[in-house]
Figure 1: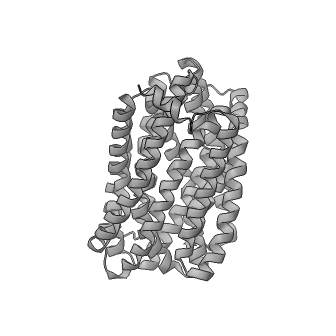
Figure 2: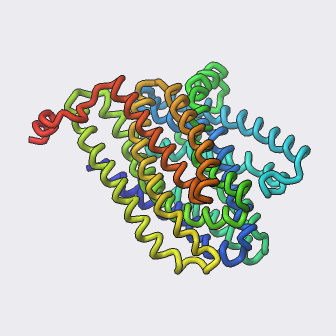
Figure 3: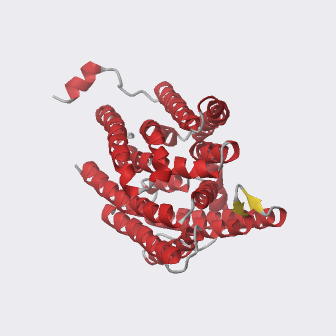
Length: 420
C-alpha cells in the first residue's frame, strides 16, 4: 500500500516539477526564433552530459548504503559524495574554461556560457542528495515539495528574464543558475542540521565512493550518448531549426520518462528491502514487475494520443512537424522504464561494471544507427535509433539478471499458489 501511495506522490511531484519546462514551451516558441530555441536545446543537452559525469550516479550509492548503515555512517557517505561532487565540478570548470580559450562556439553555443554549467550542475547534484535522503526515509511529501519548489523558483526567474529582461535563450541559464543554487544552500543546511552530512574530509571514504562509482562512468556516459547525441547529429547533419522541432516533440514524449521515473523512485527502496528476503517476497516482486511493464507500455500509448492531440494548441504552425516524433519517443521511454526495473538487480548484485558494458555497447549501436538512419529516413531516424538502443539495453540487463539471480518469471504454478 505504501508503495502505491509513494508512487502517486512521486508521480504528482514529477508532473508538477517537470511540468514547469513544459509550461515554458509556449513562451519559448513565442519569444525565441527556432534557431535560438535549438541553441537552448543544445545547451541543455551539454548540461545534461556534465550532470551525468559530475554526478556519476551517486544516488545509487547512497540508496544502497542507506538501509545497511546507521545514520552517522550515512552522514560520512553523504559528506564523501559532496566532496566528490566538488572535485568533479572543479575539473569540469577547468575544462569549460579551457574550451572557451580554444573555441568561440561549440555546437552553435558561444563557448563562454559553458562556464556556467559546472555551477548549475553542482547545485543540482546537491539537491539530488537531499531528495535521495527523503526517498530513502519514506518522506515522499517532503520530496515532492522540494522538487516542486526548485522547479517553480527556476520557472519564475526564467520567465522574468525572458519577458522583462529580454535575455532570450539565456533566460534559461539565468533561471537555472539562481533557482537551483538557492535551493542547494537550503539543502546543505538541512542535511547538516539533521545530521545527514559530515563535513569532515575522509580521504578513504571519498576514494571508496569513487571505487563504487567509477565502474558506472561508462554506463553514465553511454546513457548520456543515447539520450542526447540525437540533437547533435540533427544539428550537424540537418540544422539547428530541426533540432528545435525535434526537441518539442521529444518534450511531449519525455512525459513517459517522467512517469516511469517517478514510479521507479518508489520502487527502488521497496525493491532493495524485498529482494534480500525469502522466496515469497521474490514472487511478489515478479508479480508487481509484470504489472509495471503493462502500465509503462500503456502510458506510452496514452502520452502519444494526448501529445499529438494537444500539440496544435501549445505551439504555432512552425513546430507542427514535432508530432511526427512524439509516438517514437514515447515508445522508447516506455522501454527505458522496463530497463530501469532490471537496472536495480545489477546494483543489488554489485556488478556495476555490467552496466558499463551494456550501456557502452548500446550507445555505440545508437551512434552508428543515428548516422545511418538519418541518411535513410531523415531526422526521424534518431528516434528509431533510440528505441533500438533502449531495447538492446533492457534485453541484456534482463538476461544478466536471469543468469545471476533466480526469479520465478515463468513459474506460473508458484505465482498462482502465492496469490491464494
